[in-house]
Image (tube, rainbow, N blue to C red):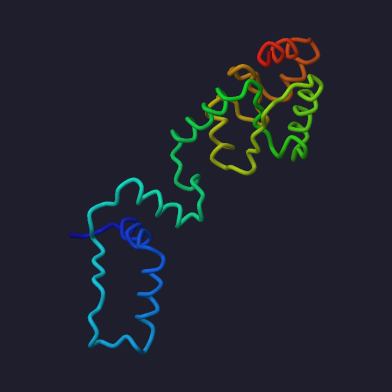
Length: 175
């Protein structure tokens, strides 16, 4: 039976670190001679269960999950964020340190309302950066969601701020 290269990597990655290290050391040391019984290292096994697979992914990515996140998983994560926070801004940088002028404008507008709002730094998560554009069907960042509804970018926020419409929406969503 042939194994795919990814499956072989996952099988190898799921071996405990201590065992893998001791086998590697033993194979490189002079104390390991051909007369000694070699460890059974069958590469093709039953596919790992979800828990084992998740541990292997964590080992290979240094604990990050976005490297193996599917677009559907990203969309679900964005949806959860939108539902969880009454005022949510996807932006470049942090609320206290915006990394672009449009994100800076968006945070300054929201700060005038003196309400609690949540931000997501899209520069820190490439999956979210691209996924939020698909989620909203809006090509630019920042993106504001109020009460679970997509409002728009900083230009639309500015228009709604100037007309007083945005203040009403934000107050209603946070009350």
